[in-house]
Length: 210
Image 1 (spheres, rainbow, N blue to C red):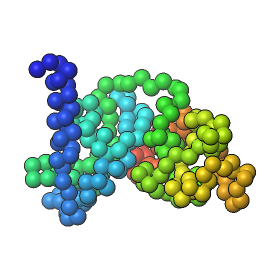
Image 2 (image 1 turned 180 degrees about the vertical axis):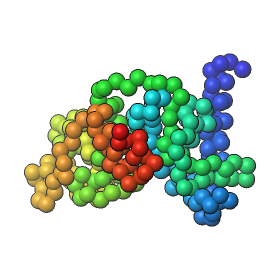
Image 3 (image 1 turned 90 degrees about the horizontal axis):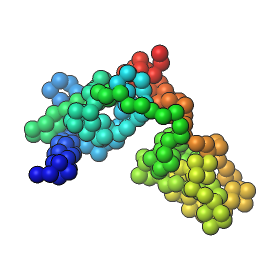
């Protein structure tokens, strides 16, 4: 087997382990709460550099893949677990990369995921907080009217507000305005969001407030 095929095979095996973890609404042997797979794998997990510096937030699915591949280790666990007939794993709350990664102090890549993270999964018009799957991206200045796909012109929006705004500019609509001005997603923004999400989580707090 070539190195390329071996790498693909290893990744498939790792993902297979994560996907094989089924769940039910019961209690685990150690008193850990077992939750549905979809719900559990969407839980936010704090990612630390090898130096224990907080650098990112990822979904629990991604965190489990990193741990199973030996790229990271679990530093803190949630009070929930996923299990199947053969596999039982405590859900990670905080993971740490085993090798130090240099994080450039620059704007993050422009992507749907990062726009939603910057806007905290909140519709920037009505303020409703929704799962990622129930949000879309809206061009504040519509593309048909010269709007560009930039940090300053893209915001998270619920489908209702997105339909209502349509091809209009905000000054053409009554009772519709942005909750806050969209800005680029810098490392400072990322850390601010980490602190907001982890404010009430003691397992996160000791890594975010130092």
